[in-house]
Image (cartoon, rainbow, N blue to C red; front, side):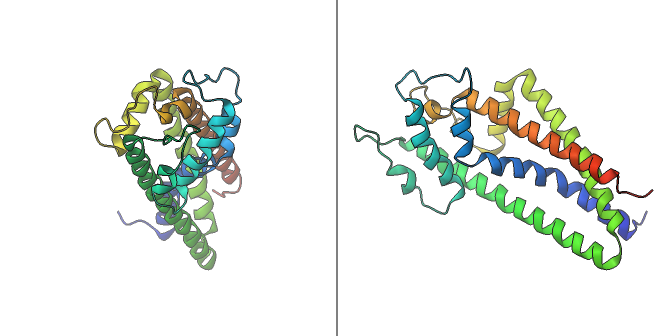
Length: 221
């Protein structure tokens, strides 16, 4: 069955919306502000190997910025602890390079989604298809909620299984596993990632609901 231009437009916007909202949440987490807040949360585990809260802030900030800047791996490799030893070992540096590749690929996909949505909105404005755009945003918001409820339930039932499954999507073998004494674990323990997922799911759910209900009020049936 041949789709009408309005139906096609609505479908495209619906499909582009979830990743757009999710990646907006990810990008907000990829700032030095998140660890600054997270490390002060009640019950956040101290580092049993000696990093103070200030130490964690000092080293977490360049580690996160590395993922979104255009600096080479030496940006991290040159970081030195007070005794002159490197902050990260070779295995950790290799993983951080892998993470940067994944993050920057996802950010490029996000930019394409944003450009696609803006392009579709401009085209809809020129062709009188505003309602198709609004319907797509509303449906996309609710689709985001449905997807995030599923992922959130998976993470809530067994966070470690969710964590391992997520890493298996992007990283080979056990390259993402480290010793408790390694700096990556000391800076970003499991609690850090549990809270990050919680904030991300919460942000995407609220954004999806706001978009779904907000746009629905403007759709004419």
